[in-house]
Length: 458
Image 1 (cartoon, rainbow, N blue to C red):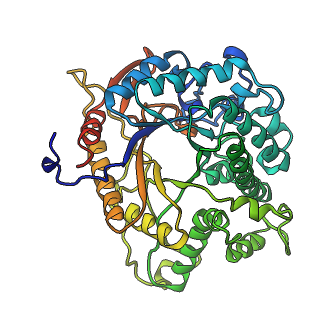
Image 2: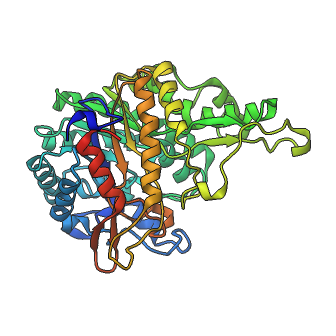
Image 3: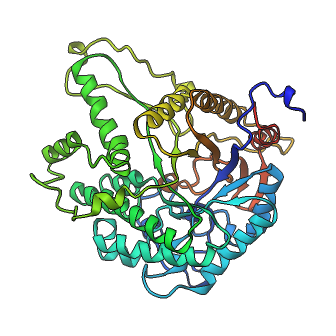
């Protein structure tokens, strides 16, 4: 295809890919010495998962990985972000590795490279070995220490072929949903423990960056955050404070320390008022921790889906200023209940670039849940997902035109999969999975994405 046919081209070196995570697709939870993860444990608790399911089988990717890599090649993917299951490598979270676990990822990396796809592994996407949780999990400093040993061992095995690494996926989710609200594994509701978990996740990232640089000198290293473009619903002081609070806890708490600014004082004050932090210095921060968290990285990964419009519940609606920021109607939300708001990508990318100046940015996840299945013709016609991607990619392109160093886009997700507390009730995939037969069907959105990649533009 000649370049003049592409009305909206991306930079020549832009990277196109897709993403998954280990517990959501691999299955085979008892295979080849894999240990128990906190998600195996949570899924056994009645009521924890919407459809009472688990990732025990999921997409059976552990056995069908060759087929899935062939599908990636058919889609024209240039990069594949997957996660490594810590319990497959160290069943207890410590000690000697299980050879079969590393062998699996060894084969996967080799096959990706054979078909011309860049491996983009994430070291932690929430499947903590249960024995580490029994010792306190991410609220315990020892888990951060164990993570560094795990990262080093994986780097030693795969680093001769893998350059691009993600340390953690969405530490906000791991800490807040896992230890504060209890919606995710390990299912704990304890504000003080969640604050400690936030810190130890970030600390383990910084330590792991140092360790990986030692064993993989050419590594391209980063972390992935789920950030939310946020807006006050009105100019009222109450709504502005609601925005400040959420933006601080969700966005700035992670961005600020990663870029050498320490933890935001206003969020510390908020959490002290809630009783989640004691007065005075943060008890879990030791000397040198903040310097370690701010270890320089090569890029920042962002997982972008929707926005938040903050309306204070501290005052009666009649006493608050008129709403000036409107949320879209229900039919403009995905099956997750998330508003489709492409402009938020542009706004957030520009903000991160201007305020923190990462060396490079990748959109490491972006996608939409819609329950579209095969029609009478056997095809999956998911026009809403196509429209979602089209709008969000145009917003990403606008950010590039505003000088944001955005280097790639990794769609979520390659496959329909186990969607955490929602079980199998939400489908994000470019590829439809029939969970009874494990049949894969490339959706309309997958074919559309393949065409975008082929022409490097819209």
